[in-house]
Amino acid sequence: MYLNTDNKYLVTYLVALFVLTLVLWFTSISFQTLNYILLGFCWSLTVHAPSLKEKLELKKYKFSLLRFVFGFDRFLSSFTHKYFFRIFFRALPPVILSLLCFLISLEGVFFASLLGSIYFEIIYQRKRIYSYVKYRRVGL
Image (cartoon, helix red, strand yellow):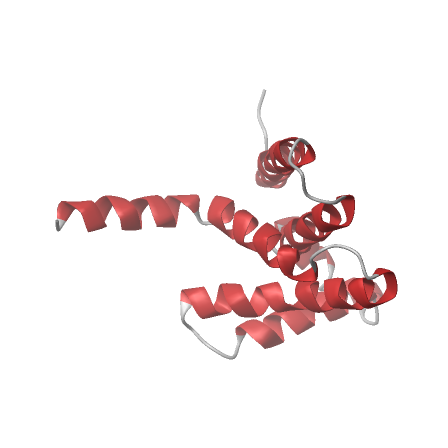
């Protein structure tokens, strides 16, 4: 069976989302905190989706909320060219959204969405991280 790049993207990260949910389901964190972590993961999943970036360039999506989210992400990532700062700035919108949800419900740990974003970035950049660790060991 042949998978194109969009399908590979979805299969890879939906399996990672399922594993994350399964692991966290059997821990003692609250359900609201689990939702915050999944929000951070899904936000990053959406922002990095290759098919959505192409689709949002169409004229009919000019005033859509999703295009605003992509533009906001592009704006935040333009502040710096350093990789780790870009990850941090990209993780801010789900933290802000989680904070707003926390103010309504007063349950859970709202900055846990940062953990979901970091988990996604580790999987998304796994080859880059692996090569960094591999070449780092060679120098030791």
